[in-house]
Amino acid sequence: MRVPQRLVPLLDQGIIDDVIRPLLAGKEAEIYLVEGRGEERVAKVYKEATNRSFRHRSQYTEGRRVRNSRQQRAMNKRSKHGRREAEAAWRHAEVDAIYRLRAAGVRVPEPYDYVDGVLVMELVRGEDGLPAPRLADLAFEPDHAREVFDLLLREVVKMLCAGVVHGDLSDFNVLMGTEGPVIIDFPQWVDAAHNRNARKLLVRDVDNLQSFLGRYARRLRSRRYGKEMWDLFEHNELRPDTRLSGKFRPRAKQDDTFALLREIEELEKAARERREALGLPMRPARKPVPATKPPRPALPKNQDSSSPGDESGGQKDGQRDGQDKADGAQGLPTAEISGPTMGPCRGWLLKNPVEGRGSKRNRFAELTAYTLRYDAFCAFYSQKLFF
Image 1: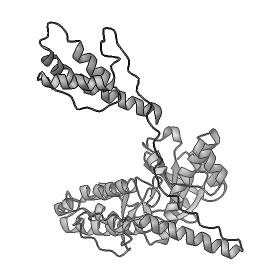
Image 2: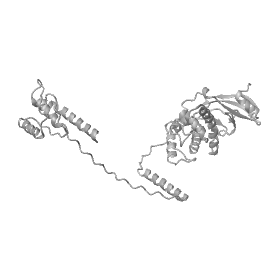
Image 3: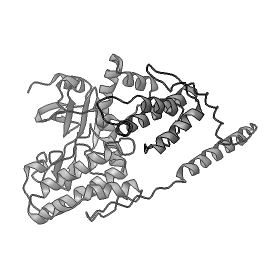
Image 4: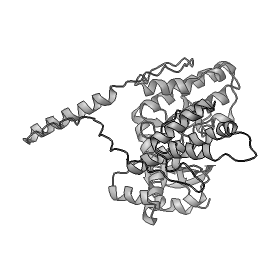
């Protein structure tokens, strides 16, 4: 067959000896069956960013860091150089995840070489000696489906203990090898400790496996393995050999109000020990500042203002009090309201009834609500102005 252009450098360097045939094409890469060092292997050629169909990439790359600070700044700024570095980091992420998972005992293909965006790794074989089929291409008996699900659940637990969440796990990313299921395709993996979407992605991964294998073993669908697994991981109780029941109930939240104070004390203790080790003098503790309320300045004296047609705008307090007494003697209600401008307003309202709207008593009842609102506004405005 015609050798793909991306595999030519590997032929020139002797990493592979021949390209046998295309094996699979996905949304992230194309898989070729190749021959290298006397055995059949798999070459995974990653697609360019413009040719990929993977969506919502940002939720997977959150929390990922590179060792070179210059590259990290360029990636954060999204410059031309930063986009190239981000693309290289995206391709190299699968290699890092596979090495980490193999060290944790997870069943993943063994990687051999990674050159110019091409990953050469182990060929997983099925029982017939041919390339292993995907989980989605097989049918299962109920007992076999539960057995396969238990094996996959153990692998997912090991992955989470290693700090890795697959992010796109489904029946299309599991190969059925001779010794059991093998998990593949890790470019979109997320760090369980530094990605805010890790819990959502983990629960989705487990739900995908339950949905597929639950077609053959219906009891699997009613379990809540993903949430139980994350709850144990979140409370540092998850171990590689943990057996899950699927019967999950959220824990009652207990607020620890002194946790922040303890953290501050630990930081102060660490800073004190560091300064003592360096021979630096200790800083004196700051004296607490008493939380006293400053006295309010006195309100300015009110000045009676007269409005057009106001006959009582210039009355003194004694005259207004006499007017109130006179109103009470006539049966009119008197308003016991305190405020900087209540006197002039009420005097004007009482002395200027609107004709055609009834007696003075009815007019006073109608305008009481307006007077209250006006005095509240005046008091609020004076406080905003002088405080």
